[in-house]
Image (cartoon, rainbow, N blue to C red):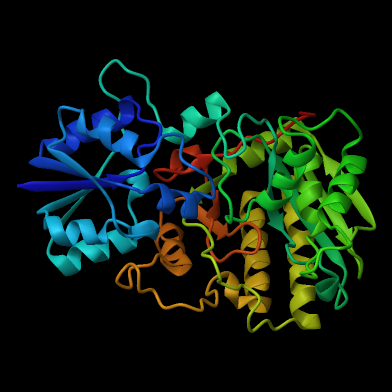
Length: 407
């Protein structure tokens, strides 16, 4: 029996070796490895080890029969390798399972197996993301810069939206305990702007003044594309804890309110998580066919009000309802968040490109998942979930840690 697995394996660790060991129990194991160019396109940064180094290391593992550099591109870069190898079984770990991979295997008559991510006996559980976070590894070197997750009211920070009705945007500042990938809705463009001034950590200064400085530095009046990054990105990164900011026809909010109550922040951490999806693909647009009207913006503003009130009461059901209502209001105005315009057909991967809708359908049906949305402009990235409790944390989910103070 031929068994196939595929991955990046850029920071090879005991978790990978145990995965190879488990997969090899089903037959002769063959490994497809993501090329340097594929990983750069997907994650927005260079690999730590070249594809030839990674190929050498994977081939040296005794459970591996042979290994190859995948010739395809994107999330399904293994398609040419699989079509040439013709394996009997395709094995993935639980956080690498996707509807597209399952459908791909079904159409080719390949058995699809999903393994639990378990450490070898007596060893600590390992993941590449966890190791990179612990080592401070990122595309720009070691950094402790936070990122942000928007909870409700996204898009209200653009005057072309708030001119219809004023309202709040709600954000939380997140510690970088996971790999912050580019083009995934976590304001990495703003974060990269900050790295140009403060590469490792934010300076110890008034957070609102810091956010103003970042916003002004990022939005150079001489930039030719005419795009103004929303202020919620800079505020969400620079202002610790939970914040809401009120917009009324201007780029900068009229007021900012902060909450650093430990009981509330801990409660949010208990009920929020993120699922990695795929980066927003180059050339796709989330602002095609927008439909911004006064009733829709008012619905967005009301959802943000309801969301804040529910958080202050720690009312989980009301929070989930408002969270969903905010996302529904966003998508009503910007349908491209879920169905982005893409100029090229899905040719590189035989039509097996992942979709936002497939992820929403999968995770919204899981027990204990109460609400969902995408951070930022959508089109890919992460699926941010509201869950009943940590017992309902989906496989492969990222737990969130809210920043309590300066970094």
